[in-house]
Amino acid sequence: MKEKMKKILENGTGALILLFILEIVLIMFVTPNLYDDEWYIEQITNEINPETNEIIEHTVKDFVIDRYNTWTSRTIIEFILCMTLKTSKYLWIFIEALMVTLVGYSISKIFTKDSKRKNTLMLVSMILIYPYTIMYQAGWAATTLNYMWPLAMCLLALIPIKKIWCGEKVRIWEYPIYTLALIFAGNQEQTSAILVCSYLIFTIIMIAKNKKIHPYMIIQAIISIISIIFILTCPGNYVRQTEEAYRFIDFEMLTFLDKFILGFTSTFREIIAHKNLVYTLLTSLLAIFVFANYKEKIYRIVSLIPVVSIFVFGHFSSIFFEVFPNLEIFYDLLTAKDVILTVANCNKLYYTFPIIFAFMNFICIGMSILLLSKKYKDNIAILIYLAGLASRIVIAFSPTVFISQTRTMIFLDFAMIIIS
Image 1: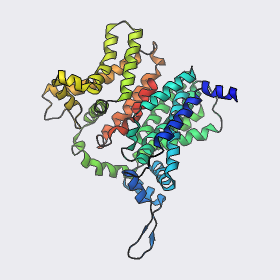
Image 2: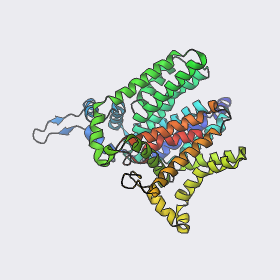
Image 3: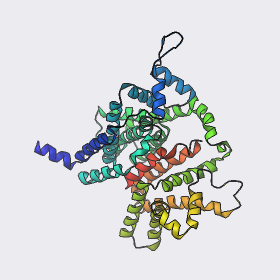
Image 4: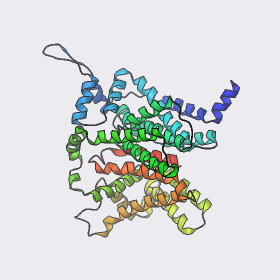
């Protein structure tokens, strides 16, 4: 027993068990019955007809089919959401804690090589930095099932890529687990895009490198493509796009370039306005790394720009705004819930500064990440960063870009945690 306990502590399992217990404690007294949760509960609860006193039955199956035709392609997610809410809040508490732990397990499995215990403890600490209150924005159950659970399943579905790449054996019983994880994660638009890109990129690289490919990579790639086709062909998504247009009246007038730029500015807005701790963690570590390993001034300046930005306009903004009042005017423009550069103001150079500033910060982070490895082809961190950033930028192609708030940042946030 002593030897087994020692092994559990050394391989990082102990840290994951601690994470599971902490998550249980954090959400034990949460009841998912507000906002969207309340609405979902109403939709699947039977009611009595006041005229005939007959019971009107609302089945989960009928609800999900109706939602597919009128609102969303997230049929698998919504089916599980309804069944969970219908069963018990304690089922949601248990699975949610399990999913957060699964996030830690999958990240550790994919990205940790040596010193499992130390790295997993550090990883658990970083996961706990993520502001968990974000998960109540649309209702605890609705938000976690649409964001945290797809994240956990997405990371689990990426483990086979690591195993096949490193020549590790994938056990027979693991295949259905990874496939089911991919199917669930593929039902959410952001994770579906991440999975399609990940499997296609690594399938091509493996074919180019080894002149052959593991059949399971092909199977997973095909399923991920089918998932995104299912999303793109869902009639409910087009209905929702039209009905959500009132949230952003000028959305249909924006060009592709407008939406692309909006993706960067709205993402940077969320980071600055909410003083993103994960962003602060990554940019601080990158600056420390660059200063410790490079003497070139240009490299050091580049690494400092993002971390100085978050401190000046985020954590210590009140101090800097008192000393430099004009910075607050720029901050207001930087964090505006709107398209910053328009036809009406495009002749004024001032309105281009927030766009330049946002792009500069994201580019500087990318350049600093490239310095993590001497060989660019070995720099997996830049792929993780680009995938995370793209997952948030794509939200700008929906009229809910501002109303969806910070929950859509979760994939970028955890990409930054992985790099950290």
